[in-house]
Length: 377
Figure 1 (tube, rainbow, N blue to C red):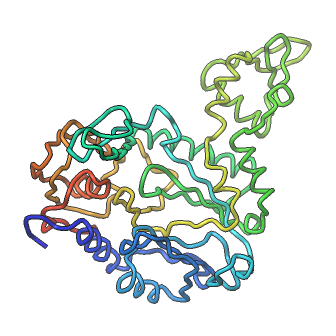
Figure 2 (figure 1 turned 60 degrees about the vertical axis):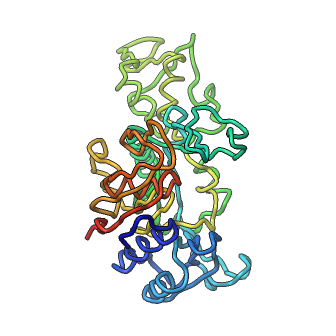
Figure 3 (figure 1 turned 30 degrees about the vertical axis):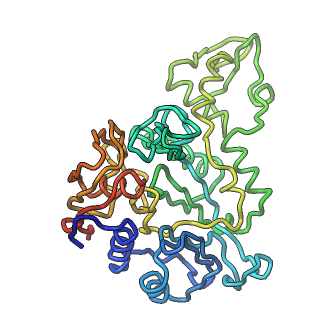
């Protein structure tokens, strides 16, 4: 496909199908009981209520019928996964899901607005000079992915130590955050209300601080044998150096004291920001492990909890290698994933594959030459 310019559609179809020809997907348990869904490149619509008893049938579908920008299976197990109506699917249980995205932290989101004439704007406007509607461009730095990862680690501790779950996996979403999946048998039959309570506990939603952390003269007293949220808060307070140990005070022995002001700050980091709707949903769709997330051109990957994310990068989560030549449609300095690039409208540049694919996916550049693009083994 080496030519002066390639259509965006042909570019995406080529790299997506070349990727899936390698049969990279991890098969979920009980595939035959999962609803399969995808967003189609060909028509931009979500196709749901599919079912495939074998992975080879799924590959045949996505390689010859519909090219998936996004590929999902249901977190739920159904007796009849291909039924068009939810009540006819016959629900048999669902994995417990959590979604932690870095763009939930306001300081982590960089927004620009692109006009069709190539102008980059820092502020949103109703119309560009030429009358067109500006296209929003959002970028999340890798430092913010690291921040989301810290929330993931805290969440895992809560799920294991406070809620007793054991079968837990974490996935990089392929875009700007992480998905946490609990597959314990006792989690499968949790109803919506029970899942709502779990989400509320994790986020400290509606937490009545005065009841959980009663204070004496603006001081909260902790014992050395706390449990649950109080234990988590105490450990964080000790780590920050704001928990004062007293051998004897208020008629008590061997206690810690934390001021209400410090407690408020500690709670901000011990309560996790999640998408509660995801956790409460018993029929939520879940991305296939090793599928492509074409919001960014990267793949969903299972992440080891012992992994040092601080030393990782977006490039590691891209399935593509080599370089891509692209033609930017904007002029200006742009934050692109974990890099800053100076772009000139219409001037062809050669970029590492993960950056070039990202710019095309985000409609910031047009593909020109992908002859040097490869796929990781």
